[in-house]
Length: 247
Image (cartoon, rainbow, N blue to C red; front, side, top):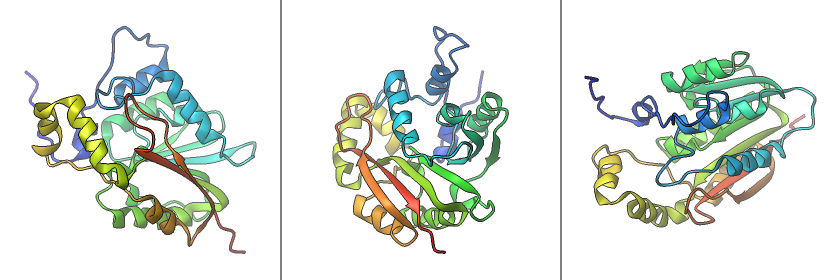
């Protein structure tokens, strides 16, 4: 009998993710990646495979026009997002989950992956053309932590390089999102997932995020994220920004 692991933080949660479906063919790599992290079967906010591809295409539309890019994803998980960009250049990923990172390494053997938290990134200055943080800021411990990560990114991103922050939980919609989760999950499951474990999501204010980028980034664009499941438009938002050229 497998011993039940006590959940202490989000890393514990991610190390136990497993939504695999035997009906999905092994050759359908993308579907299996999305299933493992719950993107296709999350009871409180799942994607369809079609919507996921539309979402990733939106992100790609912001990419610099270069033949070969150096791309980093912070909070890369099992590589579901990076898998779409695997032919565009050099792929890098960091994540604190051993289990998910192991899947990423197997799925993208040419990529370079590191077991790290977001604030621990320490790459060469001006090394990346693109830095992605997708559906990850919600697991950051605080707004102060988020701002610290942004400063680190500004150092490792090349001039005019792209920073894309996606699927950010909107602080102005926090109560709406919580009510939706409670309605979908039910009181018992909601209490089990969030109250008993004391797990919390980080909600960010749009204007505060824009302000935190203003010193080192320009051409900042904000838009609503693709909706998940029955979620309402405007619950989450995306930001695309270019690093300023200082010389």
